[in-house]
Every structure is written in structure tokens, then in C-alpha cells.
Length: 328
Image (cartoon, rainbow, N blue to C red; front, side, top):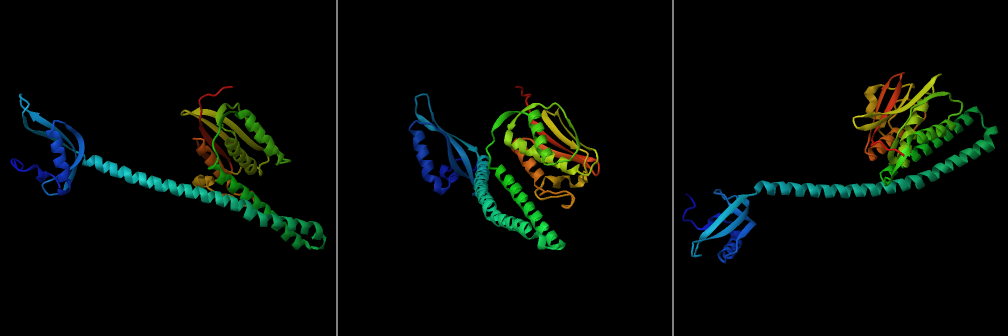
């Protein structure tokens, strides 16, 4: 009722009068206008985005009678588009930040590898020379201090190696191949036991399946997990390590179980974080990076990792991987 007899321009903002006139002329010439974005005014003067369709109405003798106009409110669509645009801008900014962070990480890796290791090698070399050439003139305290220097130098070197491995994981392109876990696990066991002379461990390794994974990544993960099992059973007279697998909820779940010292489950989230140690350094050597690497690896392979443990009763590490029953 408010619009009857009023000019059409009262519905159109001044900034859009030219567009409205052009569209009307196009329609008068006999060409329909379909789904053109335009702006209309509400009674309170606020603007509303619309999709406009115009059609010429004629009588039986093709004499023009008027124009049929359909305006569809698209304000919600525009709002969604604006939000998507804002999200895309945020995503682009975040991607840029990630790219810059990766570049910084590469620079950091280079710095650690070269700048930090150079003085470390100098300390190691000269302390070794001091021990070799002047050990006889040093008293017991002097030799103890020299040993502390060399032990900490070696620990620092191991720490740098682990940090570099962790930082390089994100840069590695994943190469999937079919892997016989039986051969892989037995090879890892043999390598690790060479570094643990005199240890007597009861091994129970089940029949393991073939999987499709990146050989370098999966070997790194299991090397770190099994190495931990060997280390934390070091105080046991009869150490036991069990490795097996089962299908669970569409996943292949592999486990490494030991009867070592275990830990309090209230700290379970910490064991997969970098530099988080739950046992004193003088009891169990290590850098606190091994399980962080294992977690990063499993996530890169689209899997997951978790732990169950009880103090003085051992620990079980579970790795879940997507598996489709690969066969040779």
C-alpha cells in the first residue's frame, strides 16, 4: 500500500539509480534480466542486497503493459560470503606465517648443525687430548671433572642430533612402500642390542603384518620406542619386551610392551612432548625427544599413538595405523 503509485526510484539508493535505469531500458527493449545483483532500500533507509529478475509484460497484441520484477533477499548469502572471504584471508595469513616459520626452522637446523656443533667438537677434542696426554698428572678430582665435561659434551651432541631429527621430519616428503614389519622389527632389535652388551632380555615378537608406510619414518618411530623399552627395563633381573599387533576399529594397532619401571598415568600427556622427562637423568640417560619424534612420525602417517603404564609394572606404547591387509 505504501508503494502503490510511487516512483520505483524510492526503492533504489541514489548510488544505484543509473544501474536501475539501465536495467529498465534493457527490459523495455524485450530482453529479460535474470539474477542481477542489486541493492534495494528498506523503509528505514537501510540497504539490502538482492538478486533482481525483470520481465516485460505484454498484451495479446504485444503491446507493453509493464514490467514484472522479482527481488530475492540474498543478505544471508552475502554475509556468508564475507565470512568465507575473511576466513580465506586468515588462512592465507596463517599459511604465510607457516611458510615463514618453516623457513626459520630450516635456518635454525642449519645453525644447530654447524654453529653449535663446531665448538662442541672442539670441547670434545681438547678434553679427549687432555685425558690422553695429562691424565697421569691429574688427581682423582681432576679426572672426575674431566669425565663430567666429556659426558655432558656427548649428551649435548645426542641432544642436537635428536633436535635435528625432529625439525627435519616436517620437511620430509612421505614415500609410501610395502614394508614387512617382521623384518623391520627384528633388524631394529639386532641393532639396538649391539649397543646394549651384556643385557639379557626375553623377547616375545608376534607375527606382524605387511603395512604401507614410509620406511624411514616408521623405522625411526619403532627404533625410539623399542630403545625406550630396552632402557627402562635396565633395572630388571628378568627384562621382558613384547611386540605384537591386532585389528581394532578399522586400524592396525601395533604395541611395544615392557616390564620396566613404568610411570604415573597422570603424566601420560607429557611423555610425548619434547624435553619432558619423568625419570632422573642419572638413572636413565636420554634427551627426552625420542617419543616426541615417534608421535610426529605417526601423525605424519595419518595414525595415532598412546601409552598405558603403571609404576614399577611396565609400559605399553600403542601405534594405530590405517591398514588394508597388505600382502606380498
